Amino acid sequence: MKKLIPWFLVATLFLILAYLASRSEAPLDDSVRFVDIDRYLTRQAMAQDIDTLVHTFERIHPYPYRFVEKHRLRSRVDSTKAHLPDSMTTMHFWRLIDQLLIGYNDAHSKVEDRYVLADYVKKNRYFFPFSATVSRDKIRISTHDTLEYPLVNGTEIVKINGKTSEQLLRDLVTHATRETPALKRLEISDDFGFYLWKTYDWGPDFTIHYRTKEDSDLDSIVVHGIPWAHRKRSENPDTVAYTFTFLTNRIGLMKISDFNGDEGEVLEFYRQSFQSMADRNCANLLLDFRGHSGGADSYGEHLAKYISMVPYRKLSKAYWKITPEFKEAFDRTFVPIGLRWFTPIYLVNEYSRVFYGADPNELVTVNYELKTPLPEEERFAGQVYLITNHRTFSAGSIFAEMFKYYNMGTIVGQPTGNLTSFTGFALANFTLPNSTLSFQVSSVYNVANSREEGLKTVEPDIHVDAADDPLAHVIENYIRY
Image (cartoon, rainbow, N blue to C red; front, side):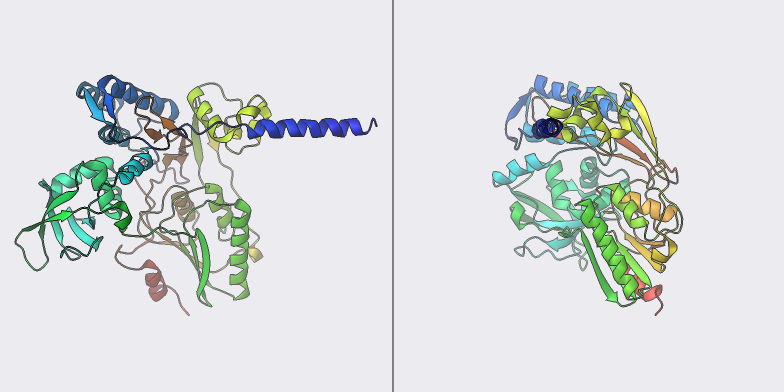
C-alpha cells in the first residue's frame, strides 16, 4: 500500500496540472468577433483609442522609431487628434488609425481589417469591379472581375471618381503595410480593389476615366460595384503548404507556401523528399518560395541541414523588449492562466526561455548558435535554386537571407517582400477600448546574418522579370542534362 501512495500523488498532481492547463483566457480580441462599421464614435472616445494605440506600440515594439523620427510621428498623432470631428463612424476611424500605424513603417504591425471587412460584406456593400496593377506610375486593368463592362486588360485607368492616378497612388500607399515604396506598389497591385476599399468610402458606383492602348483619347464609363464573393484576386493563395514533385528525373520541385503545420510532419516531408531525390540520383532542386507567408523560422533551419555545406544559423541575433505589457500579451497567447504561478513552465516554451528571469523593461539579446548540417553522404549534393518574389515574407525571407549568406545555392526571381533585418513576431491582437478595433504590434527585432539593417530586401542572384516564369528560366538557361 505504501508503494502506491507516491504513484497516487503523482497521478493527482498530473490531474491538477492538466486541469489548470485547460483554464485559459480568451485572446485579447476574442469577444470582438465583429465590429459595427456604422456605429458612431465620439471625439473623446477616438482620442483615447489613439493614445492607447501609440502607448501600446511604444511599450511592445523593440524599436518603435526605427524608420521614423519620434517627434514627427508624435506631431502627426497630435495633429490627427486635434482635427478629429465631433463624431465619426467606426469604419472611417479604422481608416484613420490604419494610416497612423502604417506610419511606423513596420510590415508586421497592422490594424486588423478582417472584422471591419466582415461587417462590410455582411451589409451587402460593394467593391471596385476590376483588378489592376501599378507599373511606372500608371494603373492598368489586369483582370476582369466582371464581364459586364468592355474594359480590356491593359486599359490605363486615368481617374476614378475624380481622383487622378497620381492622387490614387499617393493615397493608397498610406494603407499599404510593406516597408519600401516599391514593395508597397506591388502590394497594391496584388489586390487593387481591396486597397481602394481600405482608402475611400466609395460605391456602389465608380466613374472611371480611361485610355486604351489603341486610342490616346480619354473616355469614361460608370460601373457598378460587385459583392466580395464575385471578386478575383491577381493570384490565388496556395491551399497546400508543402508539395514535392519531379519535373524530370533530374529536376525536383519543392513548393513551400509557409512554415506552419505540425513540426513532425514537416520533418517527415523533408526526409521523404530528399530520400526520393537520392533514389533517383536527382541533380537539381528548385525551391519555390514565391508567396511564402512566413511561420516558424526553425522550419527553415530544418530544411537547410539538407543543402548547406557549412554550419549555418537562421539569424545573427534578435532583440526582445520585455516590458510588463509584452509579458501580459505573451502569457495570454502562450501560457494557460492556471499555470502561470508555476514559473518553470516558462522554460518549456522556446520563446519564453528567451526572457525567463529578465528584468522589467530589459532589452534581451539572443545570439543564435550555428547549426550543423547533415553528414556529407546524407546531404543533397546537386544544384539548388531558390525562387523568390515580393510575396516571400517573414520566415520565408529569413530563409532566403540565410540561403544567400551561406551560399546554399542560387536565388532566382524577384526580391523578397521583407527587409533583410526586420521586426516581427506580432504575438497577439490588442483591442482598443472604445472602437473595439484590433491591431498587432511586432515584439522582436531580427538581425540578419549579413548584419544589413537598412531598407533593403533579400536580392536574387539572378533577376527574372515578374511577367516571366522563373522556373522555366532556370530550366532553360542553367540546368544541363
